[in-house]
Length: 342
Image 1 (cartoon, rainbow, N blue to C red):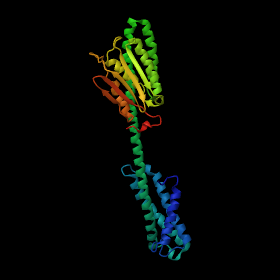
Image 2 (image 1 turned 90 degrees about the vertical axis):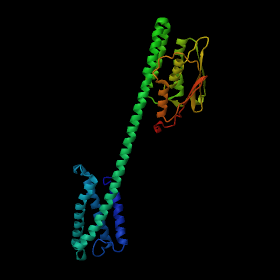
Image 3 (image 1 turned 135 degrees about the horizontal axis):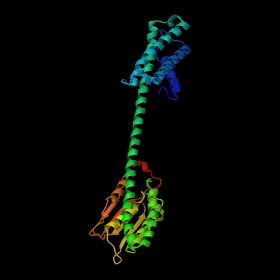
Image 4 (image 1 turned 60 degrees about the horizontal axis):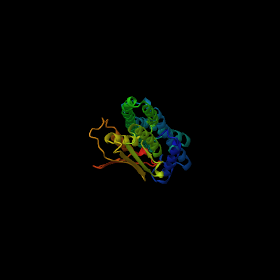
């Protein structure tokens, strides 16, 4: 506190208050008799600024204090010595100038000492409040930083899961296509490269627009069409006003991938998947055609999406019946602050 940018303004205000307090209250004085107003003002400011400068100097020297004792305690105790010397110098100077009843005496010293010790106690009390409030703010800020770092680290870990998950699944598909249809495998590889580039570019991005995500999803659907040749059917109903809204990257691709993984489909009995977006959510809906044997799963897809939305303070709604499976993902307005997540 004593090193504050407005420290001398505070000292001036305290000096004015102390002068008015002594002037207006009966029995509150610095000497055996009342000082003339202009002398009283000078003496009060001399002592108040002296106390402030003493404490400011001690605060700067706090690094030399023993670490085993709290610096505020040491500062207050040491200031008592210097403030006592200040009171003595004040009485000596006044006595030499004015003489008479203002000469140095124990009674005049006690009056002045009582005043300077009151001011010193007040300033050190305010300084203690300022000190602990500052420390509390620093600890609170540090806790927020640690929380942010923890959340970001967890979110980065979740985002990092997407890349190997996606890559692992598609490498096995590409491997089988190479033997079955090399030309088709080449097309698949080019589209896979485009898709993987998107995932890499967005790996450190928390949110993307629905428009970007749908463009990415379109490329992924083209990838699926190469592999499954018309046995998959996708319908989209997206309201235009939803396109600028935000969601985590690659979540739609993960959901479509889960649909393909858990359901069977043929040219005779294709699998229909509908994607619709309106108001504040986008919904992926498919009729269940559950496989008797499900492909090996890493367990990442839906749980990854749930965890990522949890960091955003949102919930993913899942409806699973005997006839259909549906996932509803919240859409986030661009102006919403994602830092409010908990």
